Length: 178
Image (cartoon, rainbow, N blue to C red):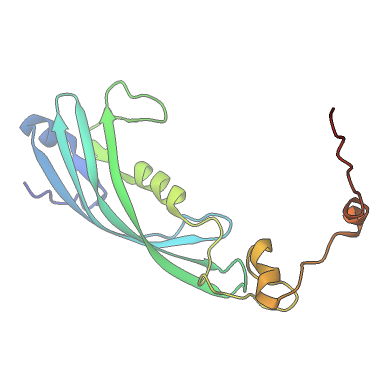
């Protein structure tokens, strides 16, 4: 069964029809996001298809969605963007478990917006990166890479913190046991 979106809320299913038939319904998602963001990235577009299947007093919503986002690169601070895939597999039930399932609403509409907003916030990158080989704005002064590989690249040992230099001069004598 193909679900016709509600013009007032296109991100919803008609709950009585879904539960009465006991089958499933598909919903095409094409949502321009405007107000969903974290400190360092913001969501722009969500698209794909979701399927809702009723089973007794539960509704299972599943599918894959594509999330378009943008934000400043954590190294060079240039604006970067990307598209991530969100795997949706959520359960709505009358006696929901907080943090595990969602509550089936008492009204006639199963609004997916709160569930989708939660998934989007969890999927947005905390610190976007334009590319894995981004060297940053001043690569000579602030090299990108792990401390283990920085010295190997240039053939020099990384500088030692002056507060710890005295520990380098310590020697330990081993006691021989008779």
